[in-house]
Length: 215
Image (cartoon, rainbow, N blue to C red; front, side):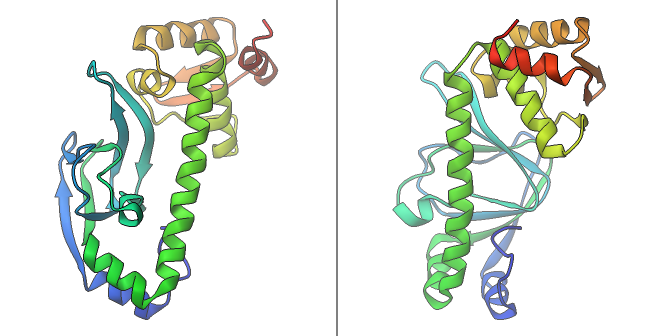
């Protein structure tokens, strides 16, 4: 977990002494957007979806976080409510640390706060990418870029796609049918191959042209 990387034994002990285990079933909410921040969740098992909800009730996924990771870091610094909602995608085992307890640890061990700020910074960079993906280009271009980015992160042409068509649609700011239709076209044109959750890029140059709108 990025937060714990490089921390001393005494710093880790200070956090663990204040942590309470909390378990969540699949689809159970860790917290809702707008609720007062009670503390930070250290997810040690499972995965969770961070999302925003429009006034019309439509969800937009911001990130899919898998253990080991943290959620709800930002409100610890600005004192505001949770800026987004978090729901367990699969059963989650987490360690919860009360906001006041965590801040006490940060005052005692400043390196903990610096590590947490690094996590917040990486998440902010990711959110900037999400905004860019939802703002620039057509859905087809954005979907192609998302697949290329996933391949880059995996370091291979073949990788497991952790998102359902509905989650892809939420990520791209569209509806599931549009994502399914574009994936089907990519397959028909030999750009990708999909088997179960495994996706393989068969024609990288072609997919890059799609991502740039050069078709």
